Length: 63
Image (cartoon, rainbow, N blue to C red; front, side):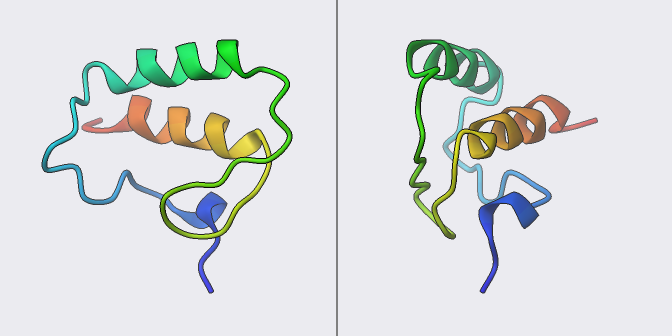
């Protein structure tokens, strides 16, 4: 089983807006700053650190 925090890239991003994604993540994290459980579309569920991890990945995309 692969855990979401082990993911090292953004995966399939064919239809993603990579310019907007980091700001979207920041807004999500601000609005839901007290979130205890995060259920991603893929992989296993976890805590708020999944959002931080996703933000890190999308900010590093293309570098």
